[in-house]
Image (cartoon, rainbow, N blue to C red):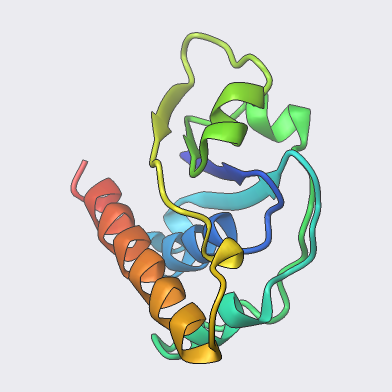
Length: 135
């Protein structure tokens, strides 16, 4: 069974959304997980914008990278430069992709401003996960 790991700095937004989409779109034929260099907690706006797409990530936990899961993944996707630069070394057989997406949690402004960025990042992640299916 193929295994994918989505990584970002805090495992609070981007990697959680990617995990949610991948579980929904790839189904039980894949093992899917996400993690961070650190665990920052699940961002409520990520939960909200995923619910708009009919995907419930409200029970997900923010977690740090599991070295064993990482080493046995077929694909590791980093969603920020920090995770790309600080991700532990993987065996050469592990495919790595980098999706340089902005951190929606860092957006300043009104709730509407923040939601706009969360939705844009969510939609970009959804498109990229769809491309994984076409592989």
